[in-house]
Image 1 (tube, rainbow, N blue to C red):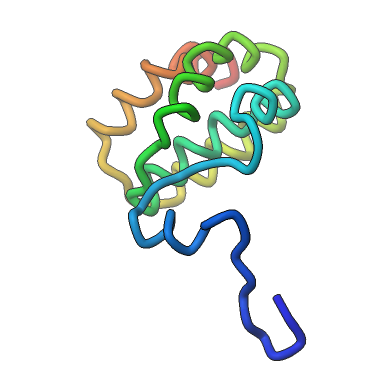
Image 2: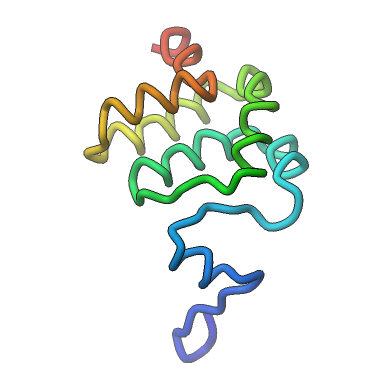
Amino acid sequence: MGINLKIFVICHGEEDLKNRCLKVIGYPDVRIKEDPLRIIRAVRFNLMYGLKFDETLKKAMVANRFLLSKLTVAKIKSELAKIDNYKVDQAQKEKLFAQFAIANLVGVIK
């Protein structure tokens, strides 16, 4: 945000928001390896705001979903609580949780 409370959007972000498309800055594979929690966050943004995954992001999420097992239980619980506190399409949630191996974590942490 600038001093005049304007939001500055870089990397064509404004266009992506208009198109309801979720992307990451840089290479999705690298970004997810830096922080696998981004997979769960991306799913949350899809469920809460109806943002579609950019195809390269989606591929990186699938390819790196095994990294979710490296996250701490506290981080996973925190992110899942944000999803649970918001009314989301349950069928879509189940589909995405299965697709990105989040469903495997739910049974382990509860």
